[in-house]
Amino acid sequence: MQPQPYSMDRTQTQTRVNEFVRGVYNWMALGLALTGVVSYVVTSSEAALQFVYQTRWIFFIAELALVFMISARIQKLQASTATGMFLLYSALNGATLALLLVMFTGESVASTFFICAATFLALSVYGWTTKKDLTGFGRFLFMGVIGILIASVVNIFIGSYGMQMIISYIGVLVFAGLTAYDTQKIKAMALSQPANLDAAVVRKGAIIGALQLYLDFILMFQYLLMILGNRR
Image (tube, rainbow, N blue to C red; front, side):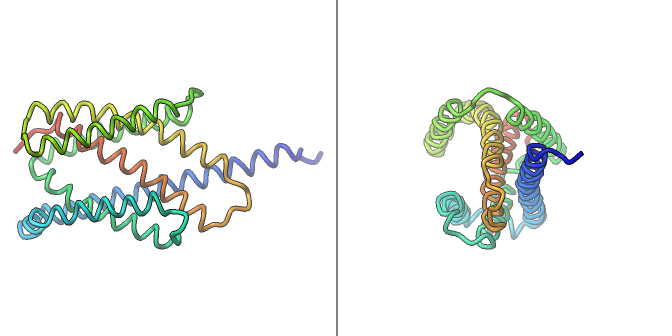
């Protein structure tokens, strides 16, 4: 008996979705690995740490510019360019992240990382499997991100430890929620792709998805570290 066309279409769709999602998480993992390697190199060198600290605003502006260009101009960028920009951002973020990591013991950094990874995995599974539409929730969380940014800028001048801890707790909640929201959005993106979509377009979609999840993970990790980390 010949297989039903419906079954073949379903199988092909599932294969396409699996390949796209695998690409998203592979690029995210590569970005995190690059960030980790660069952070380790910078923290191992006093001269490198000093250089990054003295030029931290240049690094910060460059990172913001890369995120904006990838997010806003992904359709106009070539796949190779988008990939290179994502990896460059991951490396720059690793350098600036080193300034935070040296403030905490290695044991607390490692334990916080594993806590963050387990939380991220659980929330990704929830975002993938839930039947609830998280779109409205995502808009609320985006407002939370804006609030965190404003509060963080204000606290640069105030220098309040209490305010920093409040920002950290809110940050964990916001980026935990965004992990589930972005996962659901990536699932919808994967399901909506036509079968004959160009490989370069698929790659760019995977890069923008990887960037979103990378940001959710790395920012949740930083806020968790501020809460759970043991300072040197």
